Length: 134
Length: 382
Image (cartoon, rainbow over all chains, first blue to last red; front, side, top):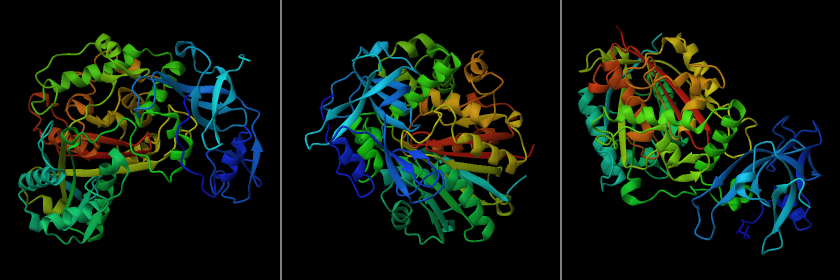
């Protein structure tokens, strides 16, 4: 995946993006009810608390669903590529890309692991590859 | 049970490729719907619309020289118009407005204003966490819902294609349909069409056309003195669920479960009572998910349920009788067109595609990425 342009973080999302500079994937976690959520929010969607902390994901997940995109929404994107919802072991779902094997080999419920695409500004985007690829 | 509010006028604007402006198409739709009701612009004291500008209802009021007592420009994509029916009904019941026009128009095909990536505002979480990956918006979300649905329930793309095949059969009966005068589709043609975002092909996706329409609502009491048979608003319900592609845990269960339950309860009817249904068909999968959510069939059963021609002309569940967004027209927000077709069927004005004796109709709008869901139940006296 070629590094895209990503809008700057705001005060809610800044810790999440800063951690990506060290290739750490944060999951926002409620200090009150231990609920997790993504993307980061100002309040916990489970209990409404604003006592929100961060935990670091182990980077393991499964493919909840995916789609192979054959028409580019932006001219700089080369098709085809695989867009997916990945469900992390920590419970949250990320929108992401699946990489590391031919598109036709992906299936729902495949186990995946985290890797990173570095952005030009030093941040990074989490993407996923098959769990058994080293 | 009637809410005491009725639809008394309904009309399309020009459809297809019009080379007209949004306001020009709005004026056609509103003018024709008022003429249908036997009313004039001077009778209108409530306006609900979207897609004109940031100040949509205000823009329309200005354009027509009106100073309405009530407006609504709730932006909820294609379901907004079913929501407007609920809000307009309440406004008329409360005495805030007497005659409300709900309208929409778009010139997206003529103006080439549709983008595969959609419109995502830079300040939203989606712009940081989703758009960078390059999903088509809204298509890739529906594609992921379809992939998950077919995986979970073991359905085939050919079985899902029946939604598009049936829509084409209805469009062949509707002179106003974009695909009128073409020919029948086969499931193989749908599956073999250009892949856009797997498993959805170009023929799994709605049209991109110009078009619009309007309906006129007033009290049932006043409706009795107007030209056309009143179409009573019997029930309504809505749910709003998500803007992000990751908020909903199960892609196969939508907010239509709640919106439908509310609408049926308010109307005092059940899914089995419905004679004709207009269900937003942005994509083939949208219809499968919505039929299940509304309770017309069980979860995971939609593709088997529609497989025997049930939703085609002559079938026992007439669905999207205009030809739908897939084969009739799709001006970006289809919700008002669902209502117009429901009214035509209940009045017995639907020509070759008329469902004989239709007395109870359902219209269900879906907006965004299965984001907003609104159901309306309409009926006429027998």
